[in-house]
Length: 476
Image 1 (cartoon, rainbow, N blue to C red):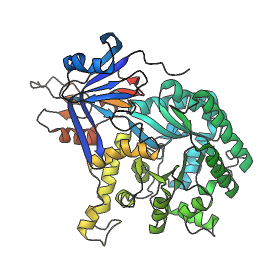
Image 2: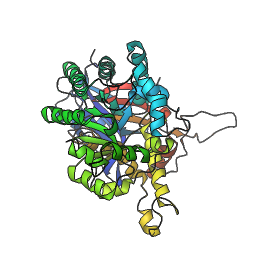
Image 3: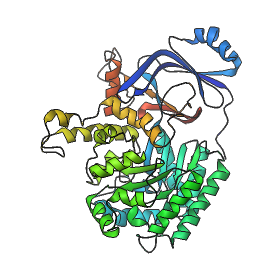
Image 4: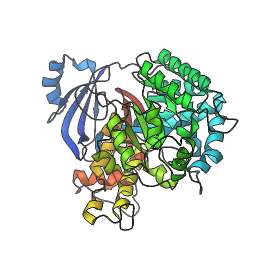
């Protein structure tokens, strides 16, 4: 069933924080954001309390007091923040979160990933896994997710149904892999892979005809898993449907070596996708760790996007992606949890790890060793920058930059209410209440509070989450 319709216009009062640009957070204090019944932001007013809104704002919008529902962020410890965008996540791998042992990518796929994905052809099991995955990502403030499902059409369609009914904005990818994979988990042929993909597209269209909330996304797993015929077929299908696409690139050195062996006539991993018509402005490439200069230039020229997955990159010992280098080339970058290579459903965790991973690039004897220290220091990302990647950057990557990622008129109200714990002025040895790991004493500046949240926050700080104006998660 579809998510419930909005019965009233909504006005949100309090502090609003969002990215104005890559390196600048904007703080709107004592503000009001008005959201109509379609879930769209129709007014953003600073220095506006409820009395002022009643006297001036509602009349200007043609709203009566009875038409309005009000939500207030508490002074001091609460603020509204845009919903997070997860640009790369495997819903089908959620049960394996944290189970990667000493594996590297290719071993991990065969030991953990393929068996789990294949088992989700059992729809009761798939429902259990997908429901929990969606609930967890929503609870961590993820309002939009680019999901990989499995090769099974029915299970993939179920993921779309659940996202739609639970109100999460989602891209649903039926995985194509007809060339490399275990006998028990592989597409029979390129034609069968394309027919199965079309079946999922039709199902999602019947569910959400305009793809307002849930959209298909064409999903070749990665070059080694796909035949040339399948990749060319997906390219043609993309031209017909104009749908987004997603895949992996240069996650692991052994993977890069395998691609070279499988496609000896291609100049590079990126060239494989380009020659098969997949390297377009609609494509999201996950990881992009071991790109050459020429590959990065080609990706920039094609306006192809990158999903940066720092948690998974570290967990599987894949490497450290050079995000600053990608950004300076003009490549749009967002963050991905990459569960279950990544151990957490939290984009906030991805943001903090993006910050820390970028610091490693600047360290002596690191990946950039040999460059002057000031050049290495440029690789480091700031708090403001990783939060941009988590919101507006992610919105760019999934093609929704005009709809989500900030609090601006015309955008959708995809948002979260964050609550940071205020330490009481009078506290005794026996008194210990907590809102999570973040303790605010009251003397911190707002940028310091945000830094505390990024490095210590978790789902306990996420009190409410809205998608398209609808409340989709609330802590009890």
